[in-house]
Amino acid sequence: MKYLFMTLFYAILLAIIEVNAKGYYCTKHIVTRVGDKCSYIWDKNINKDYYLRRIDFLRINPEINCDNLKPKTKVCVEVDFKKTKKRHPFDEYTTKKGDTCKKIAKNTNSDINTLLNLNSMYLNLSIYI
Image (tube, rainbow, N blue to C red; front, side, top):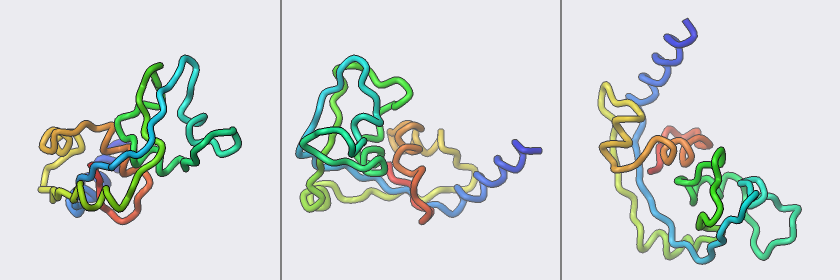
């Protein structure tokens, strides 16, 4: 019953969601080392020359898998939002009946992790890819 409810919920949600795509103009990167964790990157209590909130980290680094962060991974920690809007306009994808996250990812040349990372924190029913 739990799975049926979740399936119905996602089916209804997908029926009304508009999917957007956006790239970011990154102005500063870091490269991860052995033992680094995503929480280290967005933790404000550690001395760093940048400040990045968790929500922003996930938005601008959707391809990062925090469950398996590998050494030598290039991570964006600062974005120029003015240049981002000029250089990377939104592409739009409107869901169709029967769409799933997997189908949307395939249709937009994306992956499910990217969709989930970019959209897990939004309540406005838009998915960013």
